[in-house]
Image (cartoon, rainbow, N blue to C red):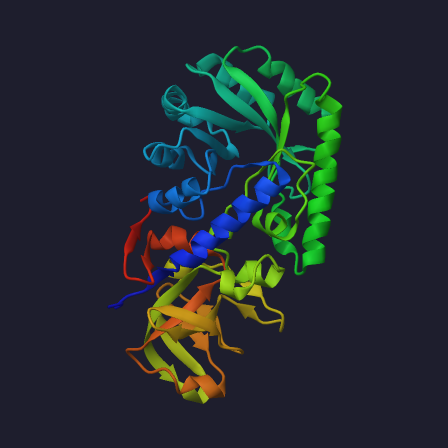
Length: 362
């Protein structure tokens, strides 16, 4: 029985999402290195392994340790190296095939002085997001980093890596395709510049919107999507998925109703959902979409309903006239999250629709 906010997981939908991406990379003959920061779960990670995944991406060295404990031995930490964690880096590099991400020669020189075991190194490329990385056309800086990498027997240059996170600003499949095409064009230009000197270099790209929408990845070597394991409201608005591909929903107790303003109060706030919001197709800022109860799971979206406001523990849900009378204090309402990655990170575990608990990294 659900008495407090819980993150529901539909294993069947989740496994189907994993399988669909695995089949796409096989058709394109590219490497899939999925990002595990979305689910952060040993059990869910094993579902990827069942579909042939052998290499993974994580966002921290602590997460790398967590998945190494479950037998993953080829792990990329897709976050710029934090040199203060050199002891953890050395411990991991002794145990697994570890790949690091750098964007400056200074960090490379630090690694040369402190590494105890061999690692692969990707150079982070800014292909348009403008968050981290070397600008795709800054050949001088790339040359400086590459020269530094050559000075150590423990650092092997693997290739160029980018994350087109600005695809999340897209609001149509065409906009996502435009981001993808621009990023790929820039990465190919960079690869062609350095390929004569580094014939084994690869280009690694990855974000769920472009990896879900685009069909042709023949021009890249590796993709690293992560959110597709669950999808969410943002992805459905972008066009990356349909609502019936969303594999998680929050189940929250109703604690009060205010029918005069078509609102109900739920036990479920920013400490459960996070503060991510999105402007929907009607121009309304929302924090989630309400779905119909269907046994232990959920059904279709209730049109015109949405999670309107979040405080720390409170959530305010707007329901249209035809739905407001369906809920009373003590009922459970189910809501698709705007951003499943941050919601899962806060909830620290899942309740499957068949009643099983799945643990996450704590």
